[in-house]
Length: 314
Image (tube, rainbow, N blue to C red):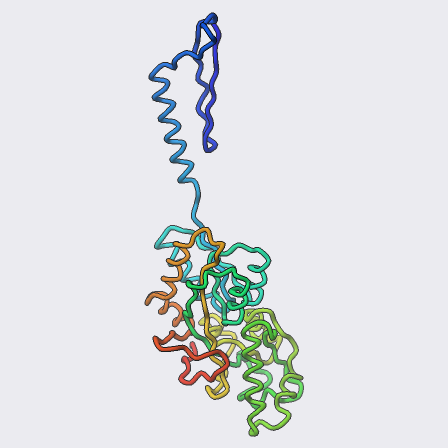
């Protein structure tokens, strides 16, 4: 008698060797019929293996979000995980850096930018699901100073004092672009003097690629003052820095868009994440971190004054 051995694998599951016999002189060498009990067991194993294979793919949502959203999106991401069981991985960085990463092929399901400029650039590269993009919150800038305020800064005029150490974002990062617009507005106001803009820019000692670096340098005392978002003065940071409000007539409103990438493998889950951000629960989290709600009417374009502006976070 000749023994035949069969091994069946599917989705990395291996059916134990099945041995059965046939008569060595079986006419035509036909493979004999498998015992019906063995056959039933084999089918059951295949069905279970197939089901396990299909259930093996863990869901994970990848979100690229502006650095200023670190606190708020960290909490929203955790809320989404708790409600859905889907793991949320968030990459926080300057919006311009996130844009570059996406354009260079980095995978993301959702992109949340601190301005329209970077979102529009990704749209122009035909990488966004344009119909999914919405403005979900607003922000504005303030000056931040170390708690002990060694430079004795009390108002915007002090930014032009010789020898002051100012830190801000680069011109490509939204917070830096907004700061430059504010400085230009102040420079165009005769009450600040004709050389105000030149003197302020001469005091800039560092330009950072995201706002978290600006806040860190001021908190560590490496700079006398910085331009940051009001949302960056969190409860934790309030123990290390103080803020000086920038009047609405000089300030800039920052509109934050969010949308789904065309390459997303999880478009339904991505939309559910955005729905959470836009929900009352999501808005409450954003407001807790100092962001302003988006009104139902048309939102003002970036580069306009913020009046009426959001109240700064304590």
